[in-house]
Every structure is written in C-alpha cells, then in structure tokens.
Amino acid sequence: MNPIIEKALEKSFTYKEYRNYITQLFKSNKVTGNEQSEDLLHYTELNEARMNRLEKTINVTDENKLKLEKLEKDYLWLVISEGWCGDSAQIIPVIYKMAEVSDKVELKIVFRDENDDLMNLFLTNGSRSIPKLIIIDKTSNEVVGEFGPRPNDAKQLILDYKVVNGIVDETAKIELHKWYTQDKGISTQKEIMNVI
Image (tube, rainbow, N blue to C red; front, top):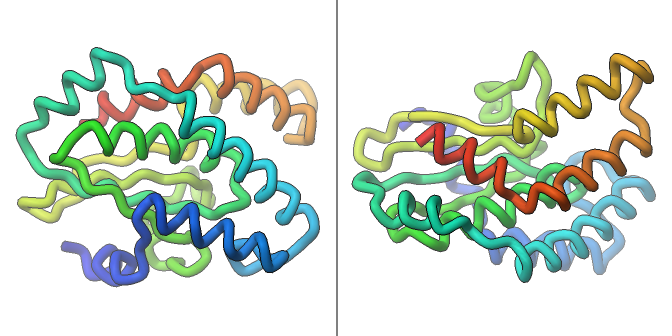
C-alpha cells in the first residue's frame, strides 16, 4: 500500500466516529480543518441537519444492493472530507449506506486538512476538492478507482452556473443542494458502482 495512504489510515475514522467527532467539535463552537469562522460553523450546522436527514431517507437502490452483495473482492473505501463541506454532507451518507450493504466494503474517513500528502495525490483539476472517495483493493492494496468531489450532473450544474454568473455564490449552492435533494443519492450510487 502507498505509504501516504497507510499514514492517513492511522488517523482515520469510521462513519459513526466521524459524525460524533464533528458533532462534539461543533458543540464547542469549532469546526474541522485549519480554518475557524462563523461561516464554517454555519455550514457545519447545516450539514449536521442534512446528514441526520439523509441517514433516515437515503436508500441504496435494489440494483446496487445486489451488485454490492455480490462483490467478489474486499475493498477499502477511504473518503477525504471536512465537516463544513456541503458536498460531503450530501455524499458521505450515501457512501455509508452503500458500504453497510456489503461485508466486502470497509469505510474509513479522513480529514483533508490533516492529510495534505494524501489530498495532493487525489486533486481534482489541481484543486483540493472534497469529498474524494478512494477505492482500494484490499488484496493488492492498490487504488482501483476514485469518485468525487460530486456526481457529473452536479458538476455540470456548477460549471453552467459559473459560465453565466462568473462565480459560485449562495444561489449556486442552493441550486446544488436542491439538485442533491431531487437526485436522492442515485447518481452518486451509480457513478461509484461504475468505478468498481
């Protein structure tokens, strides 16, 4: 296994540990990552509510359940994230629900700002965009695929918005989260299954 990935795994969390860590930090008026601000506290609060809702409402499709249950290899799914990231709040509960379906998938989560070397291996067009799912074959310890930071249709929504408006502002973020709500995690599931 790549030593950078091994080092990151030493500081990794299960999904439940990740959720608990973010909640406890938030109760102390702190957020994950290197930067602390009122905006990031606000985003973390929104994300806590989003993730609570998604844990109750997101379902893995029957087709994807079947595929996940029939996986022949064992995988480690390593996600790079931060608690204030809106895309992470929308995507990580979907990844968690998928991992729960299969005894062939182990899910671990690490924080981006604590794992610079790892993040630098998985940049998106030169940027430190999250969440980023790294799929590792547990037998060979090789990276076999990656997904993120968002599904293709969501990426296109933001690209189109930038063309028209020049920036990604609050209106763009609202439109993005509406898209996630309407999609119900289906695109994320489909694209992850295509990577496997």
